[in-house]
Length: 299
Image 1 (cartoon, rainbow, N blue to C red):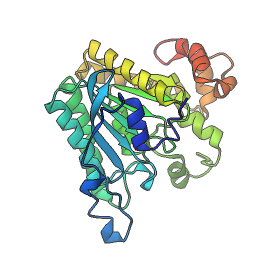
Image 2 (spheres, one colour):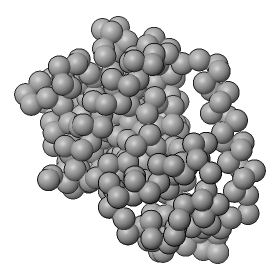
Image 3 (cartoon, helix red, strand yellow):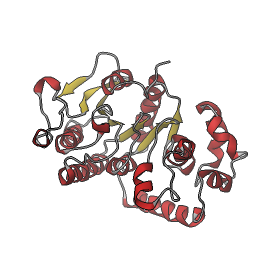
């Protein structure tokens, strides 16, 4: 068993794709770096914190990107975002079987402010364009940084989200919420609360995550293969009806869980037996308990 969470971006992408098939675009040797960081006397990375390229997944041609959380928390700047956008557009041009986004990010790089925000919006558009062209886009989230900020929105624009319990997904990070609204609203030092609120198990129970896997690169590879096959079988193209269903689900969630202060209350409202035991369950055991109670599926 090899930990997905502890792996680097290049280790993750090598483990998820078929061995020896990955071809990197704009590798570090090309030295395509952010033009903004040097002006601020900030360190740069020769790949700007994201690895992009194409390879094979069980023989299928997939384009893939892996963010490196060790560089500025995987935050998105102008070049970083452009690499993601370019990858998605090229995947459409070459009629790839799918795009895999191995996300590990705190959101937009504050050093680049508006350039980073624009870059994330371009990534969102490219994801939707890819789906509209029939190219499935799959998000994998299981890293130390999780997936926050604008990239959290990007993840929810994709066909499927694969998470481990260790992964986290949200719009605003715990520290951001605490800074803006106070510790009474969200205590970022309460790690159990943080993972109950943003972690993979909660996201799976709410229906945000398509599946939950163990913290293992092999488990992510298998889940990615299954997600690509499933998306292609049911037609990955984006439709207005699908978007309207998503909006209806979100509206229902707000109404159903309004006023609840802790995910344990939400799990209880979903009908999960003994919700206090959920955090202690391994992925396989958790799925056996949780599948009947996912929002919109069970209770």
